[in-house]
Length: 538
Image 1 (cartoon, one colour):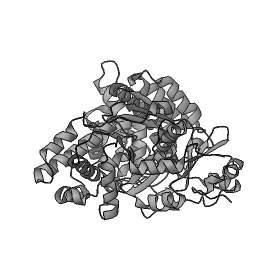
Image 2 (cartoon, one colour):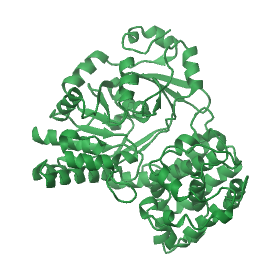
Image 3 (spheres, one colour):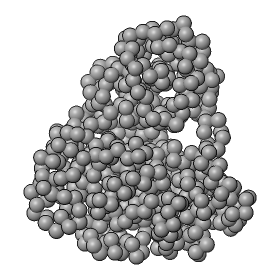
Image 4 (cartoon, one colour):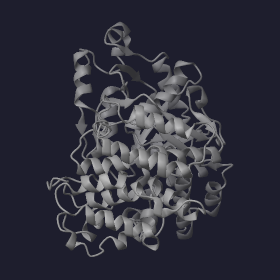
């Protein structure tokens, strides 16, 4: 059996016999060069990084266009580094799942080193400071999910960890934003070298979110006397510290047992997933779809790898914003969320299975083509119509993609304001479009709120996916009964009125009443979700 480690790569014939493509560069030299002169550190060591971002740098290494890899870090789940990266010499087995059922298998070897961003680990912090103070450091990137940038809860209050960080100062940072701000303070003190801070997370205006959080922490620390005014000015000057915006798109589901079995049959050992102490389900391999898109604002004050040679669209901020808005508010993300919450209620366990359901397919077609497309601005580099055709006709129905509605339903409270709220705001601001014409989007929002009752359409208890607002929202709905419309006494109104959640007060327009009406209809007992869905898509 083959083992995934650097030693085994010295037997390329064995890997080729297993159908696996190996890296085509001097791995040992790359590791040495990267450790001595790092140019790129990435925070967020999960599957999207391993399957996409690390693959981009590998493509450049294979082409001889760079000599350095990436250093991977994590601010949240250190077990990923200790249990998935270290035992396999920082290698990942990428399995690309094609719609025809065939697989591409590649070993991704562009990660030169790892380091946990743990302020309680002096050795790790010393290593991070050496990386951040290296004059040649060009790029600090992130895939930490949208909630990783949040400093406050929905009430506008600082999260407890943020409060503690603001009071303790840079030496005791724990929150992701506090940690990178503290490390930037080290870079400033070591000569204030220029650098790019690039969020590659799947959220609107990701660079702006990152910049705002880092600046807020820096300014608060300045007021407390922990850092200097010069440091805050350094971060605020995008000629010194830039925060390029980006749009990323690639589906990387949790590792699938069928894929694991295929790898074992091919003679590859030790591919079993693990569950970390932080409840991350992850494996030495990543299974992913083939289509992928990354659009980045080309603002890098200390230079950058030639990412365009690996298929990245390098462009201006306006084009990134239009492309991201196209995807996140219309062509993919709203469809995913609608399938996720409604699919959970209807008992589905695969997104691809949902696309065989005529009602669910009609739902996402109506959200995308009819309700979303009128407010999409064509970014020029990608066609919105071609993009959504690929999503609905190729990507979501791919039967070999083991993606689940339960995974997509994670953190929905952090997503609805962008995935639906932006389209709603566009309708409200339009002289030609009427918010009263929306039916599929309000149904999707109502379905999410019905999902929070944790009872499916058959009346069976179901688990809700993790969400930072889950307990709060469920408490607000605790008196609503899934099979009793009379139990609804407008408990939704405080939720729908929250502009932090939806981007605007939905009770201030007719949309709030429509969401309430759909929600009440779904409280009629078994089968009510299905019947309401049929009504919404007719």
